[in-house]
Amino acid sequence: MKKILVLLTGGTIGSKVENGVIDVGENSVYLLTSLYEEKFGKEDFEVRVPLQILSENMTMDSLLVLLKAVRDVKTEEYAGVIIAHGSDTLSFTSAFMGLLFDHYEIPIVLVASNLPLSKPEGNGLANFAAAVSFIRNSAQKGAYVIYRDHKSCMKVYHALTICEADPVLDDYHDFRGEAFGYMEDGRFIPFRKNEKQKGQTGRSAVSDGTETHRYIVPDSFDNSVLVIRPYPGMDYSFFNLKGEKKPVAVLHYLYHSATACVVGEHTGFQEFAKRCREKAIPLYTASYKQTQGDLYASADQLLKEGAIPLLNQSVEAAYARLMLHFNGGEI
Image (tube, rainbow, N blue to C red; front, side, top):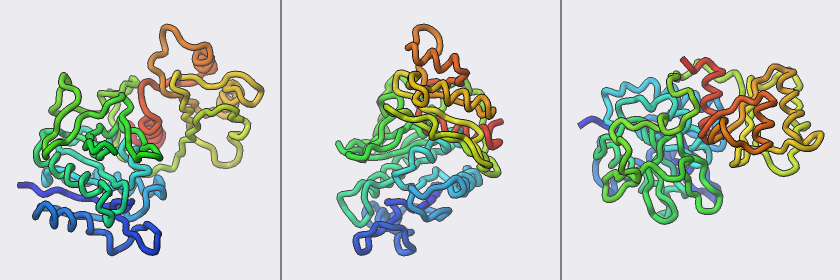
């Protein structure tokens, strides 16, 4: 039986509580695997620690360390890989994993925890145990996230379609409206009975016209993508795009109807689009259900301003695609 590679990155699932402060520390590094073996018995783990940070402190440099660690895994030696990750930025890291490693012939599973492992009411150990069962008992390949929600459903998400957790229940949701499946009694059960399960990938579930593109881990993330999201009264003049360092592209995520404000001297999208054109900065907008047929007048205006539409994807997936594209990670 092949061993399971565990990559520890810190986060709540790798933290401890001291004097009311939750933080990573040396004494908490191997707590997760130790607790698992105390409760479920001996398992053949190989543990590596590429990072030890709280995930809100994830930078592109630290993310690159993790991506390279996964890239360099000799997949033929392992049954699967579990990445213990902080919950705050898990969905962003997951999007990169889904684009880069969904073709792997073994499962790569990201897990997190809503509370430190010292608190038994938390879900971190249960999520980790479910990931072990998923690797040992299912025939899935590619990149996933496993996380127990507040209703005690142990959900399995495709890495490319999971969206950030909400601040009240700490639950994630799937961009498509429903997770890929769930774990029950150590078995994987798909929600979509008609989906092809073996070898199913998250990439095929979200279409933006780039599915034929392949991605590799770039040497660096020197080029930055600016992400902005609309809200009533947002003043586009705040984004002046001046100075020596400017973004290589802008991702303007939109309201759910693929719209943004198009009225007002500084609150209208047109001024910002013009500024991007003048500075030769590509302006991407997402997410559209379609770009043909009936559109709202404002959505139609965005396209007439030269915005490049991205279809059917979360902000995390769109950001990951653009960061890889503009940093030499697309082939």
